[in-house]
Image 1 (cartoon, rainbow, N blue to C red):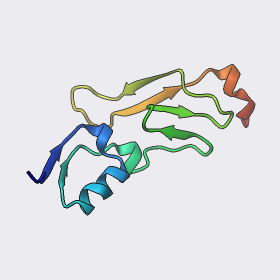
Image 2: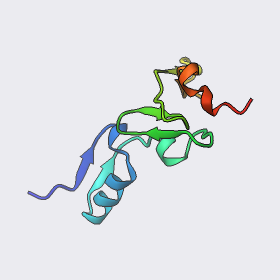
Image 3: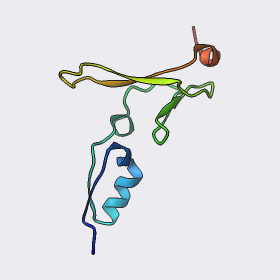
Length: 95
């Protein structure tokens, strides 16, 4: 049996998976993660870990929680916001 199509969730929309599926000539049906594919809003020195779904600040501390902001009714302009322990990350603060 040859697999020709795979249906998955956003967790499988990583660039490596997309490349592999293309090489194997498998149609991948998956919503793209906007942070991974279009960059989302990035701030210099912060790094998003897509596998663990958290952000690391320039001081090396990971986010302590995340929330979705935006309109639930329209579904437009929704974004993930990551929160940090200010005391641990303040070493990076430029103000």
